[in-house]
Length: 445
Image (tube, rainbow, N blue to C red; front, side, top):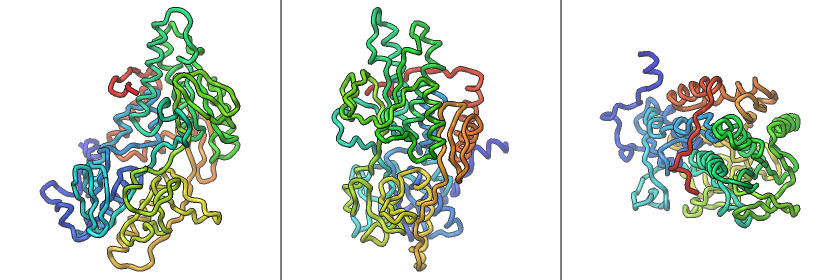
C-alpha cells in the first residue's frame, strides 16, 4: 500500500472541493506546459497552499510534459516514449492547478483574456507566457523539406523509424545498395546533436545488427556536422575532447567547421564544396523562439524572443510575464548585452523567479526580484556506459558520469510512474537487447 500511494499521490483538492478557475479572486494564467510553465504553476500552488484567493490555470497545445533530456534515448529504444511524455494534467491537478488543452491565438490585454482556438476565452489577472522554441533553419535551402528535426517525442520516434525503414529497404535490395540509403547525417554539434548521433549508433549496432544479418552494420555511415570549430562549444575543452574521442571510437565521422549550404532529397552540400550522399538528415543546428509570439501583440525580437525586463515582466506591461525559449532575457553576468541561453535549467530558474514575483505583485509588495542566471553545469550522455559531465565546476567522464547522468535525471522526473518504468527499462537493458519495432503512426515524413 505504501508503494502504491507513493506512485499515485493524492491531488491537492478533491474533485468536488476545487473552485472553478474563473471564481478565484486572483487568476494566474500560464500559457505553455514546458519546463518554465510547469515550474511557475507548481511553485505558485506551493506558495499559496494555505490561501484560497489564487487560482492557477495552464493551457498548452499538448496534454503531456516532455522531459527533454531523455528524448534522444527514444531513438535507440533505450527509453520508452510514453515515459518521457508525462501526463501534464495529472501533475498539475496533484499540485493544485488546473489544465486545459488549447492553442493560443490572440490576447486582449484590455479585457484581460486569452483567446484560444475555437474562440474560447480564458480570463487572467496575471499572464505568464512560456511557449518555448522551434527549429531554426537559417534560410538554408532544402532543410525544412528534406530533414528530420529533434524537438520532441514524435521527432525521436520518426528518427528511429527512419533508420528501421532504411534497413527494411536495404534488406530487399538485390545487388548494389546506394550509399545514400545507409548514410545518416546529424547537423548540429550541440548536446542534442551529439546525443542523437550516439543513439543512432546504438540503435544500429546493438539492436538492429542481430535482426538484419544480411546487412553489415559497418556499412552504415554516421556523420556529425558542426559549423563552429568545436562540438559541444559550451563545455570545457577537456570534456569536448573526451566526447569527440568517444564518437570517433564509435566510427562516427565528426566534422567541425562544416557548414551545410543546401540539402536535397539525396545529398548534403557543404560550404567547402564537398557533397555527402544521404537520404537521411537530422537537423539539430539551432532553435528560435516559437513564432506564435508574433500574434500576441507584444514587443519581441525575431531572433531572441519577447522583450522582458530583469524582473521578467514584458516591456510595457505590469501583469504579463515571459520566460524560457520564447523570452529575450538579459544575462546579468555579462556586460555585452548577451541573453540567457535557451536551456531547460534557465527556464526552470526563471519559473521560480516569476512565481515569486507574481505573488509579490498580487500582494502589492515592492521590490520585485531580478533574474540572475546561475548555470549549474551540463550533462551529455553518449551511450549507456559513457557521459561527459560538468557540475558546479567539477568535470568527470566515463561510466561513473553515465550513472550520474541517469540518477540525476531519474530523480528529476515529475511522474513517479515514469521513474519506476524507466529504471526498470534501464535494468533490463543491461542484460537484454531492447525490442525495436517501427511504429507506423510516426513513420510518415
